[in-house]
Length: 419
Image (cartoon, rainbow, N blue to C red; front, side, top):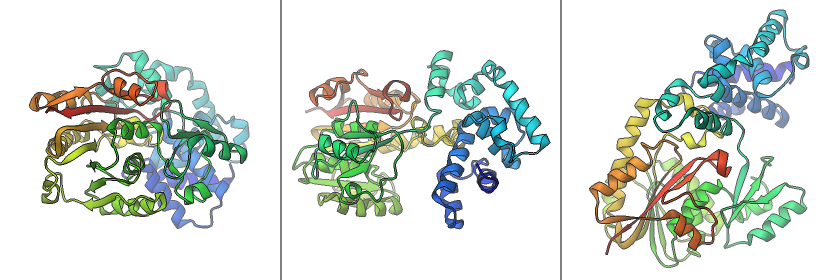
């Protein structure tokens, strides 16, 4: 790391470590303001800033208010997070900083004494998880999410076959692997920039975590059906569902955010999908939704959630969420599920999903819904996946975790309206 890169990293961390804005938004805004930074500069700054987020518990244990001492926080991230020796940083540090880093290195063994520093999880999250997870499970979870995520891709089956696409990428020297569960997935472990690759530009490839791909598979949409993606966002799952339906039928992509839906439209065009109808709604009980009451064959609710299953990608969420924000989300999830259920026809399918690992947002939410709605019954996710030739059994619910499945943490329940 050069002195200039270190200065830029410190500037980024002074803002990022206040946790007032999403980390990726802080980084994007900074790079927009500093357009002259080269690719290598941006890589070093981003890697070190995210290392600081991943190892914030250890850094905060030795630096009071890390955002107010961002250079020290950046240096600590280089040593604790990126494995650099102090000797490698000799040109970047003064005597006092050398002493600070030596002290940090000497503490490495004692960090394992506290669960929050050993697992790199804040106290509020440990308290939230402790009723369901023992100490070893918490440690395993914390360590599994403390590494950057690979880049998962989905092959658009309207444009190509996965084996051929993977072989083409391998022939270019890219480390492409077939994902173990999704029949459409390819994994790149080096996070290659693919946004200008011909297979991305022509709609053959989309960036999508393997776990997210499995949610579309569980929905099981067929050609000619009416499908609702109730919280469509930027439409990753919507696109996967459209390909499953071979561009036949009708998908309503609802979301409250105009900007997210605007991002879906060029992706639809690129993927060659014409059966998707994006529509902005004001809230879950918007009158525009009512016209579909009892008419949808499949409804997907990828609910707003804490995002705690995506901490490999968004390590700042540990510090931007709280018991209070989770409590608000629980009520929102319940209300959305209530509204979405009205759209499902007899024998129609309702899939509730989150990218959270908290039972309050997952199993408990589904159990509450089924108690209040005896007209719905729970289907077995393992059996549905087996029928789709996916060798994955996490029980009645889909429960994916980073340590075991190398995906983001995903939860899904599949319900059917009784005849």
